[in-house]
Length: 174
Ligand SMILES: Nc1nc2c(ncn2[C@@H]2O[C@H](COP(=O)(O)OP(=O)(O)OP(=O)(O)O)[C@@H](O)[C@H]2O)c(=O)[nH]1
Ligand SMILES: [Mg+2]
Image 1: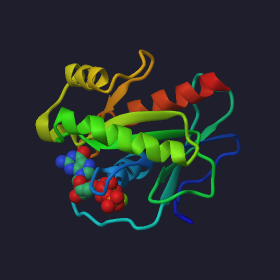
Image 2: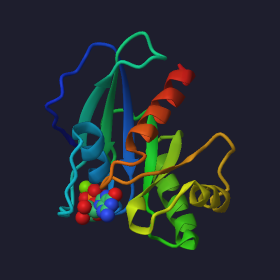
Image 3: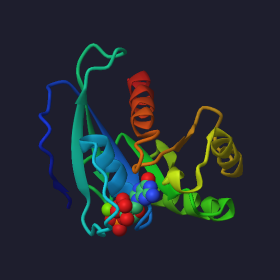
Image 4: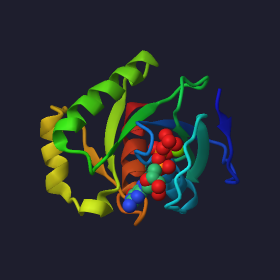
């Protein structure tokens, strides 16, 4: 069982639950804090329990407000997840990313989650650009419609874009 903490006010409307999965130190908490509270810390503290935080939006493509509930997943959850994102440290070699992706894809599937995306974290360290996302896309043999998100919680780059894209995917599926 996880705990949910946030000071953001929930607006009545559509809720999307997004689960962040990945190894320790991959950057899940950092993405959660950057997205929901626009904060970042270099101090590392391992989370043993799943955590959630929320952010509400008014999106152009949706007539009702959308509340995004983001979960840092450390164990199976009691709530249902709409979209899972595997968080992979971008400083890992591409050859390791293949095994990593398959390992976490299997975990997601064991939880019954079939909509699974991948995001590379910490892109500020090696300064990756979109051509690297294409390389990873090819190495992981992903479907055409699936993107590899490049993110940095330190700079904030790619974080809002990723969540907006995930929300759009979800709204199109409604
Ligand atoms: N340079 C840089 N460091 C980052 C970034 N994201 C996270 N970190 C650092 O990486 C370390 C681990 O990040 P966390 O987000 O705590 O990792 P986690 O996946 O939540 O780890 P667990 O809670 O143990 O599962 C922390 O020291 C962060 O400050 C980033 O975008 N850039
Ligand atoms: Mg954490």
